Length: 284
Image (cartoon, rainbow, N blue to C red; front, side, top):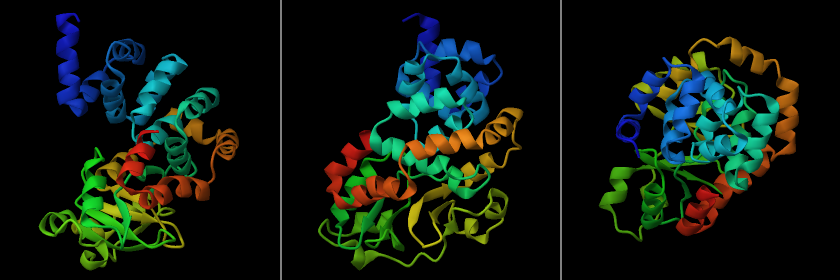
């Protein structure tokens, strides 16, 4: 590897946000060429930190196979925020290349209007049931890249019952159940709430990660305050054009899994199959 590229790769790996900020000053075509020389996992980290409209431009300039490879390594939330701004054929091709579980999570987020909390929800979260053990919760947390300060406890219908702080998991015996440790969690945000309204909620004084639920109280994922701030950036001409493509987007969504199917494959399987199955589902 040329020394210059080796240095750039080191910068990307250790400072993805700073790398993304620097790259946004370049033409998308130049960034697309650079990222094709970077391992897909590292390139995906940078793309996830770019502004969504800029990321969409970069991926559009890549081949379908290369773009799909990068999206495979992105979180469902980051992938959805970029895919919703892409031309329909490219979006459908990339969605079709994803594994069924990841595709279901991305499709779930894509169904949400852009300026709602649901469109920025992170779906790969530590969700378990009360009968699950502290050991299962530790394994679930170990399999996640993003940090969480709690695990979420739900019932058989995925309705949020409470949380168990990570600190509590470290202090208790591995065989203890989460039902013995869970604390009530009154704070929760409706997926249908607007980004602007959600930013003004007092719950952010207590935690910068909040659970997101549907109208029935079922847990869909979490929203981070930093992501909401990012979502509140005024829409670009590209994003406005993508919003006008709603009929095409809806056709694409209906072609894939519906919300109920997404949750059955996603959170339902994650909490029902143990730590090993959860890891396998995440990697599909």
